[in-house]
Image 1: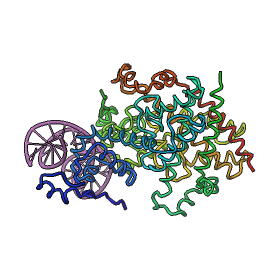
Image 2: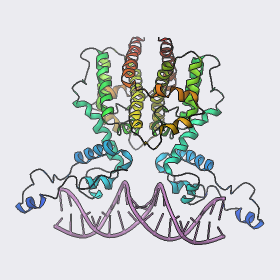
Image 3: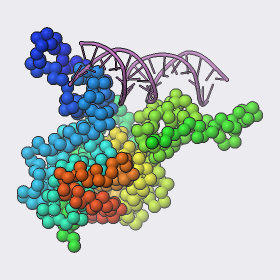
Length: 248
Length: 248
DNA sequence: ACCTGAACACCGTTCAAGT
DNA sequence: ACCTGAACACCGTTCAAGT
């Protein structure tokens, strides 16, 4: 059922001995571990196996090391998860379609930011709930933007485009809550599709007997219109923001 | 720092012996445990101490019983959490302001439903993230409605009010994603406020040096306009739904 | 400098046994 | 019928010790 991650998938010990005998650094294997490698491995693990299976001991095994070694690079499991969130959110910095500040108006700027974070979410469906629900360091670091870098970009960007302070703050709250709701549900529906297949379709149908409307509309409810509805809701949000901008 | 829940807060053993000697059931204590009592205790624990501290062993201790006894009433920890979600969502059934089907139009109906679920969220800020992110049993059971009962009510209600099948489905998706985004963020901001106070305000201020806009707008970002913005976004959503209704 | 062994205090869960 | 003791296989985390 669940394929366990096997230890030693990074064969650190294969040619390590020869290098040690020669007293040199090995060619490329046996890189001595680093915070970055630890966090990367955690992200890969969550992407592939989901969050529940991630333990310090397993992660160590994957990296060819005992669990205790990880504490050299990360203060603990909680902070590791925080680092995972940070790593994922910062992927947006490498997205060429996301820009730091408005170049063609604030609507284009926010369109790019929204689509950038959506791409991140869809790349990491198993990890995104972490981005959504990990307790934020400060009340103004609202998911799913979360990082000071992007919050700053948002605030400066809209300020430069003529939003007043209160309008910027209100726009920020509306923007984040739209993204969070939409993306969390889109990502959840991804996971639900390839979920446990131990329930046959007929069983579902019969257990739905007391709920005829759900049963009848099941095909319509199953339909995935995420992409379209994201565009439309975003468009609507931007229109509301235009009103916010011109208040007072 | 963390006040541990003490065992025996239900003093089941106090007058239990006398009753046993008389061969009768004790007056009111020593109720023999039940699924409902277990789930209730879990809800209370999460409300008071948060999810991370909840373990089968601790919950058993609170109920005056060994952890293994709980498995008579609940298949396991995961299913216990599912039951917690169900219990919380079903609180809405007892809310006199929430109605089963439209009596004064679909807008009034949805207003009541939305405010009902918001009250639930605000009553259980520590448990609501569970409602939001526990994997749903089926893709059409979208959080935060989640229960067949409420989904059915939504579908029937809007159908009766003249929404076509596709319009109902689209409205359902829009309604849930609005609720999820808004309420998750509102509830998170509640938790963040009384969060760890080990960071002094000045420290935050100085670490914010590279992010002048965040620093400058911090007061505005900290402001809580949740209630007002909930009303306004809901109003906007209902207007969009009116358009969805009249499509085609 | 980097990793490990052994240990501690916890988990969820099982099963045969107690009353 | 209901609960427990003992056990199993796991956790996160610490610290002194190894190389």
